[in-house]
Length: 522
Image (tube, rainbow, N blue to C red):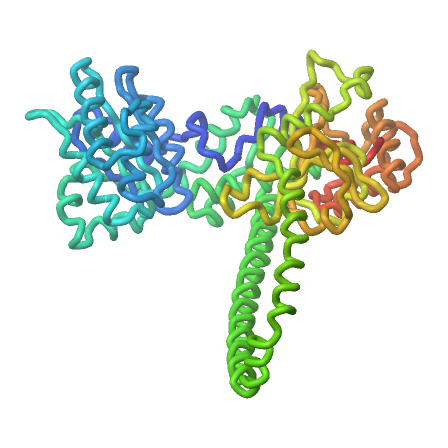
């Protein structure tokens, strides 16, 4: 949102582990040196531990980029796996073709050993890095120890790097893992940044994001950032990102101590709300459990009291039971018909692009500077009646046989009493409003024509784009005068629109606000 205002190419404080943004504080440099030493000297096992948000994953990605071309590497994120799944995943990540895709553990180990020997014969090295290793079971860790036995008389054929939170240290010193713990010869515990590193960390990320020096954090702001974050990079990113948003809203290029203080307060409010929701959810769960137990006990007692009547119902009303069984066939048929509307990620996305009408925007869409992109929002189902463009619904209750993240229903058009959906064969099907509500999973997405030359429209801007936004507001029921000037009235109505649909109500017409307005106009 604020990148163009500050002259940045991208958000400098994203929480994603991008190795370009790794700031080599003394602690991070030591950790990287330990990793490179352990691999280059073929030490076998290396363990890197650290608290949540200290930058372990970013460090690992940077480490992998430092390896020479002759070193084969594999990175495993999913640590909730069995010992056999571990072997299968390792071979897949190294791109090893096997004759036994569903073979035994021995088959997978033999295949891996052949790969390691081949790499060693070519003068190469092999590195296996497992992130979030504190979640590995003892059985999987023992399997890793057995893999480390794949070696020549003088050299380890595979270097295994375990990266995890501080609990990994406690896990490794347990008696059952003593043999594995003794094999780890290179260890490092990554600590947070020191107070003197904060300035360098912030400046490094600003420079990588394309900053030209026009954006500045004051000394007071940096001290405030450290007091809140205690040197934890993830917390630094969170407070800096919120501080830049506040500075942007105020039109400031200097981030002061006061702005950082407000950012900290807002983050703490968000965290308090989250904790309250979690506590309420826990209390509600306990209450529901007690109520359910009470109802079960009541049902048992009632059943015993009326056992004679129940026996009559069971043994003397077979015709009624058969009729009820027969009546079930209708809902089953309905479910079978609904199943045809369920699309996976690829087909639903392809369907959205097919339904996109490029001819309607060809006069305003520049193919050289623009592109079609997918926009996703979490939104309440009652708002779907406002949508004027094709969209897809993320299913709330997908089939249990597959991942819930890959099932959608594609809607071509909203009608007065429901919508027109597109099934797996590309045919249109009429669905009711109740159907839409029942299957609404919270997330809705659609295609939006982005323009790389677009800038956020703020108060005081005067341009034809402002006139277009004012027209979009009027069409969606937020009445403003079409003046072409981003005046107080336009600023206020944009803020009201944003607040109504769950956006940050900053009154700025940025990409997400524009994308949502676009969805709601003909």
